[in-house]
Length: 288
Image (cartoon, rainbow, N blue to C red):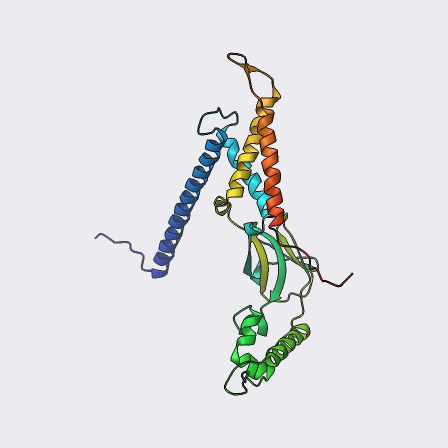
């Protein structure tokens, strides 16, 4: 009598199906990104060779490292190359290192400027939102928390007066100062480690971070493309200017023009980025 083997556990079947679907999605995504990378590399090569009118003295495999170098420059100097993101970091991700709690963050995070507990937190747990403005505009927050009159500018109906909003802001900030004790932390971009130097307990954390845009997103920027071309021109000038030789017919190569063009345009791009970067300080008039 023949026996038939069958898997009667639906959970195993569902898990295997979800795993295969996720693997297919990741593979398709990687293929799309590879195609985008290839097209951008071809754009850079065409610009360097003037649509194949000139020989390319550097190998095509040297172009991707130049693109990565340009991306590192833009991540550090262009505000548009980074974006603000909230991350929830589970408590289980931390490892005790003496009196400190250390967690490894994704490599795309370049800065952490806010760390908040989620356990027993009214600000970041009960409301389900991180926006202070949302809390103030919430009716229940003003009515129950700040005790506002909710009257409009004409004294009738429902609305918000400036006094109500100011009182709500004051009470919220007072509450945060008393109960939302800030955590002392340190994040190093090079090691990717977030160190909590306070009492973490069993709480999960909400992180306010700056993260790098994907390198494929930078391909859409004109100045990023020009910066990649400039790095290629400078590399061409270095290679062709290392040894002096003549082409057939006694024609010589003016290798310095490649480096001069590149340095001039790179200085222009750096100046443009500096002029369009947000100020890291506040200027108060009538003050020393």
